Image (cartoon, rainbow, N blue to C red; front, side, top):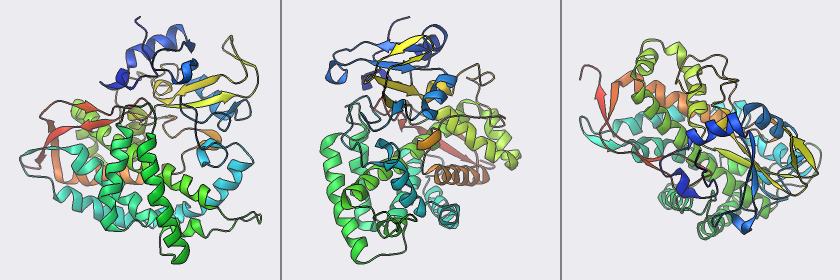
Length: 397
């Protein structure tokens, strides 16, 4: 098997390298990735590819730290104050405060708005003509929803969405490349100050003014900025990739689209299968806090350990026929939203968005047809489509 440089975004130009990871799971489930010309700081890293091992690393936050080095192959810049780059007790404090904006009741309030927005977006689909589903539908819904949640004024939204798209597609191996992250941070500071002076009916305002149950201080400006910089790209990009990748899977497996059309009770399991299948956040990085052993491999304190959710979600030891897209798959214990301490804060919101947009699409369209070539994000951390040229065929069309 020819080795794939996992530190290079170019290795993901045609999507996730499934063949390579199938080989890793079978032959080298805990594999040392030697440094290459692309590897940050010339330092290699461990690659963990099997489901059981990925779950084990997720659950052992003491041995595998999020704070010592960050959560990407590149060393992080926000260790100690970004929610996803902290360990307990810092993580517990931050999570308790931001969770106040993401209770089931708060997220449930958004459902009617998400359905209205979904219908408005689908109304824009040109009848009988080809269009890029990513930009017209898959990107638009989660981007507008996250803007509503954060209270971003309508006039600012197009620029912010463009910043995130450019940052993710910069090919630098990071979720947000530094120049664009600086622009996003500057905007976040302005918006947070507005919410502090004049809170509105949005989740960001709630979090800016949230009080901890244990009497610890409110989030400071640095923590709030880090929260915005995490939530905006995550909310806009990962759900976009799940929606677009889910539709592509339906096009490539038309029997599954028809199953859903004729049995709407499958929508819950369909959403979970879409998340398993697309796994938009394909890996996380941890740093060993002490010497440890994993599947016979000695991992030294301070070494980088990458855990690949996309690979875990194709593990034949856990998922029967894992390369079959099955909207009725049960059980489906995927790790598409992570696991353990750092389980995705926005999982409930993502599930609602995916569910509603597919409910609305199967209601009005007989099927979709692929009418051009696919293109993928130039990123090895968030992998998704940038071009999905399709034609929507209405019922009776």
